[in-house]
Length: 336
Image 1 (cartoon, helix red, strand yellow):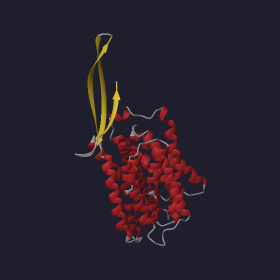
Image 2: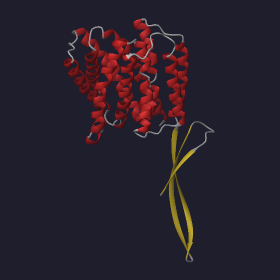
Image 3: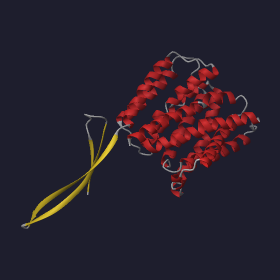
Image 4: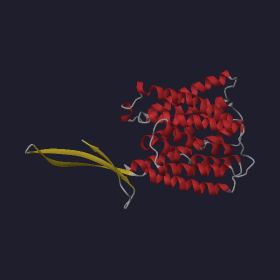
């Protein structure tokens, strides 16, 4: 079980790294393509790319995990939110610095955790709340460093709106994450991309040049397709809130890539914020790597009733979670 959790953490971090590429590269592409059109091509790239991967790598277990009618409400919610969020994000990127967008994107982590807790009743331990607080603090350190590039402009508010949409979308996806990952990503990509394309054309945006379109599709496959794929696989094991905590690596990677690709300056607070982020991620990892045992016990109880001895067998199981030796045990008993 612990191996699966470690793999899930690595998948969540990998999802963040894949997504981090999108902000600085999108900033470059937006000089040649409209924001809604770019959002459409990014999602279409994700759907087409993962569809091609599926053709060459068929997982037999995927056939038994297809989406069904009970998943319809979450699937529709996921697609609609995926149409709104990237359009808001692309407009935000166009209006503000790429590094600023990368940092504001971390609000998605808080939104995902709060929605998971209050709406979907996902259990979040005090330790995980501490990790989320540290991660939020790290973002604040990076964001409010006195740089004139950071301010709550219209573009910034659009990025926050996109983060709220994706926070809700993450939880909708979490509800169907045990289903076929290929099917989910392909549906997200094709339908969200088609919806964004209709909006882009309606708004008067033109189709991009072939090379720009191809670059957007490739970026979509990596930054959206592979990112979503690995994110869903992580969610299925450790839940929405914990996955979003490890996904917090994305803004740091995005800010670094913005520095490398766009020559945007990183402040001296970057190292301090990174240190806090690493500490917060370590706390999240400790909480995630808790493991549970289930022990089954049977007890024979003898009752004296009207001069006769009656025998009663009681079977119960209890689960407890702990980290390492010497950790206090938390027991949950279920009597039969």
